[in-house]
Image (cartoon, rainbow, N blue to C red):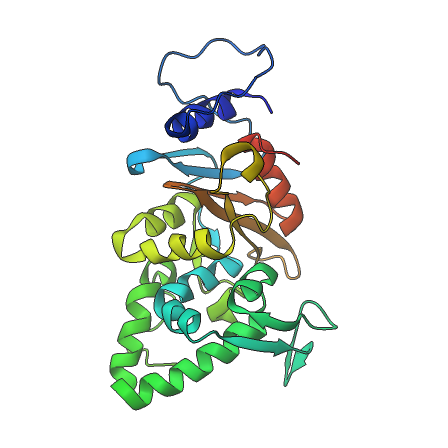
Length: 278
């Protein structure tokens, strides 16, 4: 593992545990003490990092806004995640449900909440959201229920809904399909850092750490967690881009890679940028 970005992360993330890792000699010019070396990004890539204390650094297209895709499922955790988690939510994805066809034609099988996040399963989330909507209408009424959802999703909606919008029957655009919900790496990171959204990152640490990147042998018990997602490309039907949001401890990171890139490639790129093992 090498590279100036990793040297910076090594200093900020590992000093508390006293780990000392051998690093290869680096050809890069020495960085001033405390300086953040810029990661080497490919054209169209956007990266945002939040370090200790919430200081956000953006690189490349880190402020560019685009459809957020399956990152919307993390936003739903803010709305209903505690209920789904404590209620041990489960769903069986069989590949098709009415007019909705799973991106994995055989289906994902039996899913827990964490597994549905990993697989980015629209069917599971839409089923849980429909159950929650029925409960909200009964408990609060449709107006209060809509206010509750709209308040959380407002940073990602812009002005793409009419001013007199009411509680909808939530469909695929609300879990990331199409262009309804949009963000940038910096914008989503800012949202994750808001105190009222802290449970979203906490859920990632509890359930997704180690799912994609095994680093416990190197850094102790606390692993990175990552949520990957695909998103549509405006004006190009069928094309996709990809997102990765994740973190370790109080450090958070969001990466967006452009058209034609899938979830595995986005995750591989983030691992490369951070200097983690392939």
